[in-house]
Image (cartoon, rainbow, N blue to C red; front, side):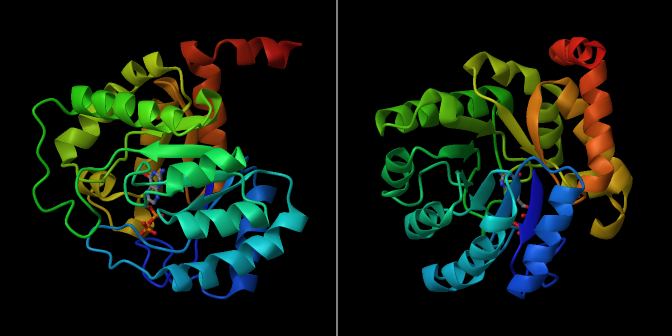
Length: 269
Ligand code: HH2
């Protein structure tokens, strides 16, 4: 999943794709590099981010979607917590809603997704982006995220979203200290019991920076290590800024992982 943020303030690519033409060109480049999904966001969720109005988010996201849909065959995901943005985006050709609030922020979100037959990413977050890194606390982060997934999957099913359309994401960096992020990545395979594809967003995140001691722009090797181990531990979708680099990391990790053994037979065939 290649990331295109149409925001002035995203922590890595903020301000780079502020014009629709630039964002569309970047998305096409990511597809060319091998992205199987494009994730478009019009609101930063970095720690401390200020919420964006519905109208501003629509103005940022929809022209890019309109320009991109006729040009690509890969599914397009929209990173939004707002049902109106999701509704318009799904009507314009998006097919996945990446909701970092896991259907908790907007009471109409589940219904909009269920009616459209789109897929949804349910991500774990403690708190809200504005406050989430102030003092995250867990007794057992793995058990609490698992319980959260069970509750949110039940809510999604109740709203009429099909089990096969649900993707789960532990939400690296969303209300988590370094130790919480590491525990979640170490124990990632435990979430496979829920029988939903696992998505991880690790790309250039702060917890990688705090281990490798590098600024955002120089975290690609730290990201590569984390991505490889996540794929080995069951991640089926990795959300990254650098598709050209990470595609080989993902292919190699998948080829070596016992969880992906059938891929080897496909290569031989
Ligand atoms: N991380 C970010 C944004 N959206 N969605 C999912 N499902 N999982 C993630 O880990 C995730 C996400 C943050 O990264 P980015 O979009 O690059 O930055 P920003 O929120 O500042 O726009």
